[in-house]
Amino acid sequence: MLETTVVVIGGGATGMGTLRDLSMRGVPAILLEQGGLAHGTSSRFHGLLHSGARYAVNDPESARECIEENMILRRVGKQCVEVTEGLFVLTPKDDPTFVDPWIKGCAEAGIKAEEISPAEARRLEPNLTPDAQRVFRVPDSCVDGFRLVLHNRMSAERYGGRALTYHEVIAIRQQNGTVCGVTARNLMTGETVDIACRMVVNAAGSWSGEVAALAGLEAAITPDRGTLVVFNHRFTSRVVNRLHASSDGDIFVPHGSVTILGTTSMPTDRPDDTTPTYPEVTRLLELGEPLFPHVRDYRILRAFAGTRPLYTPGGASGRKASRNFHVVDHAADGLDGMVSVFGGKLTTYRLMAERVSDEVCRRLSVSTPCRTAEEPMVGTVDPALLERAARLFPVRALNLMADRLGDDLPATLQQAEVAALAARASKDTHITDFGGGNPLLCECEMVSLAEVECVARDPATHSLTDIRLRTRLGMGTCQGTFCSLRSVASLVEHGIRLEFAPVDSLCRFLQERWKGLRPAMWGQQAREMEFSRAVYAGILNLDGAMHEQNN
Image 1 (cartoon, rainbow, N blue to C red):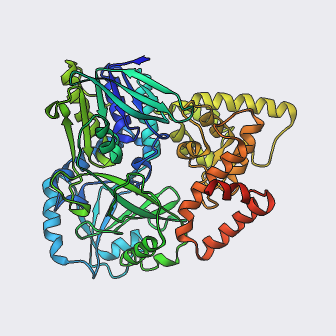
Image 2: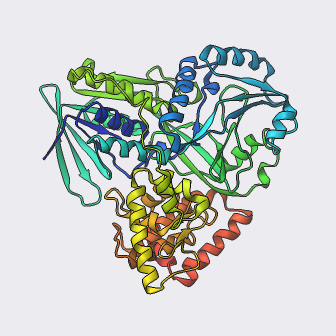
Image 3: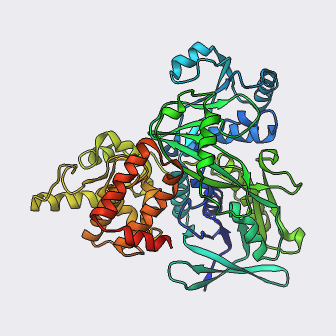
C-alpha cells in the first residue's frame, strides 16, 4: 500500500497544475490518471490561450480571469506559449449592434481591444476576408496543451510530487463519513494499488461526475462535445475570431505549422465521445468561410474532437452554460476530505489549481502561499547547452526541441553525444544524421532519434501515442506514414521496449491517426491516405493485423 496526504484524480492541465501547486507548498501528493499525459480534454482543444474577449459580454467574470491568467502563463510557461495576438472581425453576417457592448465589456474586464482598419487587418493577414467591416486587435495567444501538462509534471516532480499514468481509480474509500484512501487499477498490468490519504481532489474534467459517483456523490457535469478541423498549413499568423456572441466554427488558431478551426458544441452523455464526423467537418468549413473565403481550398490534415466538462447545476447546456469554474468541498454533502473542481477552461487551469489547493491547504492547516504565478515551470536553457545541442540536432528546430524536452534536455543531449561517438567510431551514419548517430525520424515536426529515445525511456511512456503527445511525432503532413515505422524500428534496434509488440504498436498508432483522417477523406488527403494504405497493407502486409484490431 502507498501512503500520501493528497490524491489528485485527473492528469490534465488542472489536475497536474494542482499536483504542482500542492507539491510547491510542501504537501505530499500523488496524481492518478486513467490514460497517458494530456489524454483527455487538455489535448483535444483548439490551442487558444484566451484573452477573455470571447466572454466579455456574456461572462465577464470568465473574461477577467482569462486576461489575468493569459499574462501569467506567458511568464511562467513561456516554452508552451506562442504570443501571436488575435483579431476580432465583424463580417456582413454578424450583428453590428454587438460591437459596442463588446467594447465596453473588454474595457471593464481589462482587455486591451484596439480597433484597426480592415485594410490594415488585410495587410497583417492577407488571406482574411475582404468583406471585413470592423476589426479589433486583442492579446489572444496560442498554447500547447501537451507541453503544458508535461512541464507542470516536471515542476511537480522537482518538489516531490508523483504522477501515475494509466491508473484508473475504481474506488474512493471512506470511514465514518471521511475519505481514507483510494484504490486504482493499473491498466497496463491489471494489478490494483491502494493509496491511503487524508484528502482527495477530483480534477477529472469531463470524467469528474463519474469520479464523484465513486464516492456516492452527484455532480451536475454535462460533457459537451466539440469537433475541430486541422489544416495542413498555417494560413493565418494570428488567432482570428468572429465578432459576435460565442458560436460554432468562429475561431481560427495558428498552431506550429498548421491552422485549427473550431469548434462545435453538442451535449453528450459520454466523456470519451471523441470521434469526429463528416457532417461536422463540412459544417465547420461552411461556418469558417465568412472569415477566410478560400477555406475549402486548403488541404485538411485531419479532424478531432474533445469534450468540455461543463458544470450545469442550473440545467443550462451548450453555449448557454458558463465557462467559469467551481470548487466544491463535499463536506457539505456528507463526505469529509473530498474536494472537486468543476468546469473551467484550459486558459484558467492555473487559477483553478490555486483555488482548489487553497481549499485543501485550509483543511490541512498549511499556510504556505501559492507560488505558481511567479515561478516558471521549467528554467531557461543555458546557451552553452544549446550550442552543444546544435552539433547533434537540426539547428532550425533547436529551440523547439529544447522547449519540448524541458528538464529532460541535458540527459537527452548526453545520450545523443554518446551515440554520436559510437556512430563515428563505427562509421554508421545516415544522410539525416546530425553529427552522426541521431537520425531525423519525423521531418514534418523535426523529431530526431535522441528525442524519441528519451521519451520512450520515461516510465510514463507505454505506446507510440504517448511519444506523439510529447514530441508531435506523426502529427505533420504524412500523419505517421513514415515516422511511425522509423520510430518502431529504431526503438527495436536500440533495445527499448514499449508496452505492445512492435507490429501491434504500429497498428495501434496508425488506427488512432485514421480516426481523425476518415471524416476528411477527399482530394489530396484521400490520395495521401491511399499511398499510406499501400505502404502498410501492400508492402508490409499489415492490412490483416489492422482489420483484426478494428474488430
